Structure formats: C-alpha cells, structure tokens
Image (cartoon, rainbow, N blue to C red; front, side, top):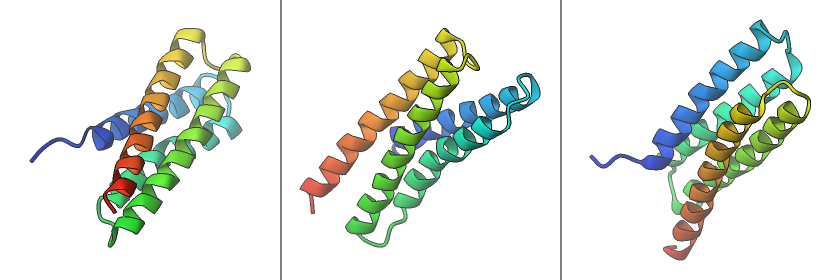
Length: 117
C-alpha cells in the first residue's frame, strides 16, 4: 500500500504539537494558548484521516476543508506564541514551515478532488 504523505506529515506534525503543549505547560506554565494550539494542531490530522473514510467525494472534500481551516488556526497560534516569546525563532520557523507545507498539500488535494468530481 502506498504511503499517504498528507497523513504521515499531519501525524508527525500533530506529535510535534503534543510535545509543544507539554513543553509550554511544564516549563513555561502556559495553559490557555497551549490548549488552543493542541486542539487545532491535532485536529488537522484527525480530519485528514477522517476524510479518507468519507462516504462521498463531497464528504471527503468537506473534511479536507475543515483540516485546512485548522491549519490556518494553528498557524495563527504559532505566530502568537512566537510574538509573545513563548517560542524562539528557530522553533517557531520549523513549526510554521511544517504547518504551511501541510496547508499547501491540503489546498492541492482539495483542488484535485474538486476537478475529478
């Protein structure tokens, strides 16, 4: 079976977000922002995975759209964490890079799915 790069990348990203949440709560004693990014950052992969089992092409596209919205929200929280000095520049850049890469793949996947309707 061929590897689904979007699922793989979203799982890896979700794991990084879980580790970030742990770091923020234990070392920075930050609870509110860390919970927000935990929810949106792990929701990306959950919706991508759920899309794979959609009962129609429209359902598949709808789930990918939800995942896309979650990437936008996660990107927002990462920028807030960076600008409020909870994340240093290299860590923020790395996480933002991965988030934007997933967002680009999602956009391409949605467009491809819409074209093949």
